[in-house]
Image (cartoon, rainbow, N blue to C red):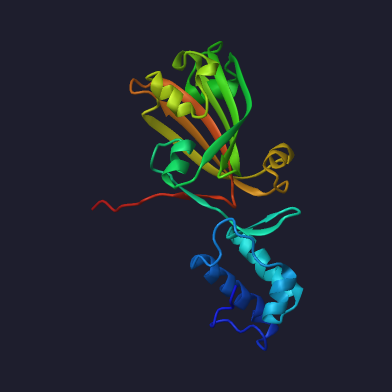
Length: 245
């Protein structure tokens, strides 16, 4: 990996050395010299290349990890983050989002269960106590890289059975004629707890995005209540705004 002509860290003031190194790494990522999922050079290699201390290298890399451009993997190194942009205004499934971006989606089932609604589900979907629902809990992957956790609840009358759902919940709902046509979503920042962090192989307390979705059928009946926890270093939300005069 050749050094950028714009960057000459050696001889500059110590207070700006890490910013120069950050600029070089940022340019390498933006110009695809370092592609998503590529490992960046080690601290020692960067320190030798730019004639700076490893403390300076660590400070530069820490800043890019915080920005979400880089991600650390315990025991493996530091990699260019493979981020996904999710349109906040388009109603689509995780599988559809990944395929549209040329990624290979996959899931790992954590559980498939049935039961009666709990208070949160009843309130969120407007269901009566005692209503039977199906619950689908999954880990989500893109190109084998963990992206997040998905917890979905669906009224039992929206699906023929638990086994009707294979990889895509929305595909199963569409086959049954009960795919949501309208949804309300709420987004908030979260920190991954111990159980979630272990599943995703990330640090406890790592930042993430929680998207809560309530989906409805054309006649207004509730069709889903989903809580999706996405890694903050791998997922971006995007929306298009227009001005109406």
